[in-house]
Length: 166
Image (cartoon, rainbow, N blue to C red; front, side, top):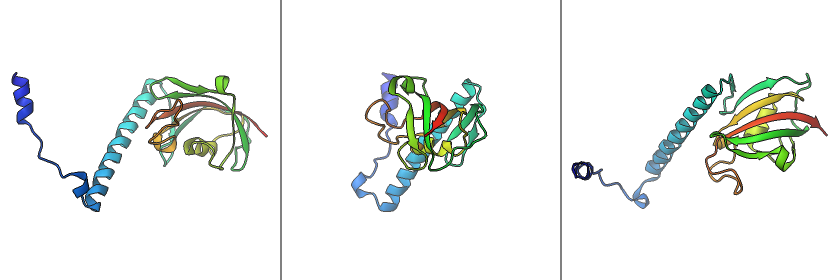
């Protein structure tokens, strides 16, 4: 009973209804919400990296990558058609997709046909590399997921091997 009284006595000030917010107030509210989401995701990624003992490179966009095994000296370039063997997990560790089940991922680098984080990662890799990538939701499937296995706001963890170019 004491807890109920304490909760009832801690009422928040009434908030303005959304339809009464000015554009500036709405923008400020959205920026605050986005900052909160990004900070939460960054903390989740930092914890994942620490738990798994990874030494990852962070790019300016938020992509993180680590080359686990170096391949050839030939770098992947924009316009190359690449073939990836991969496993895609959620940051919680759940397997979402893999080339073993779905077949290899084949795409042209820079054509926008894959998540922007995966596309960006190709610019740091060479043929034959085995790499781990952490792709924040804004570089992956964003607010909505993919309507199959990737949920909304999903931070993606790829383990990839660039096997070929065609």
